[in-house]
Length: 243
Image: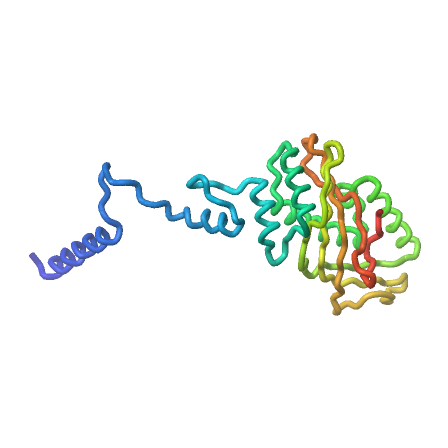
């Protein structure tokens, strides 16, 4: 046999031996090897402080609420026990699985969309995301701005925090209030294009309280904005207060 073939045979045999020593050989009678992905589930359960009663348990609605209340993240939180208990009541009454993490992430997206749609005068987007009463307040503010010939330019730079401050059920409608702490750049120009408010390069701190509402009996998955108000005395009032 040529020398090069002998060398290849030795290398191949060595590889087979090495793989068997690492992976092992499994017969039909051998127990199943541990699931390497289970550690991810264990880590999530540990983070949410949820005991694992089943091998592949996925945290449910109540688990996520109590977990977030006990261990807030860097950007998401529940302010107090009263809000936590109210969220648990909402989760029990919901026809769908209520995911508090998903709710807060979607609420942040809605916050950015509404703020920037108001700046752009986008009535259609606002009407789809706001309760009728809130939309009327926004539409009236847009009309007044248009009459003055002013232009508002606003961009959310970041959302520092979204915290649920309170929640309650009214009949079958759930209401959740979120405090948003954000940084935005906003300027207002007059009809001549001159800046009369804000700064194009200096971010402002923005802290607003928004109440979202959802009919738990409805097949429409949207949570509409039922109320908006500033939460800082020196807040730059970009949006009209709808309460």
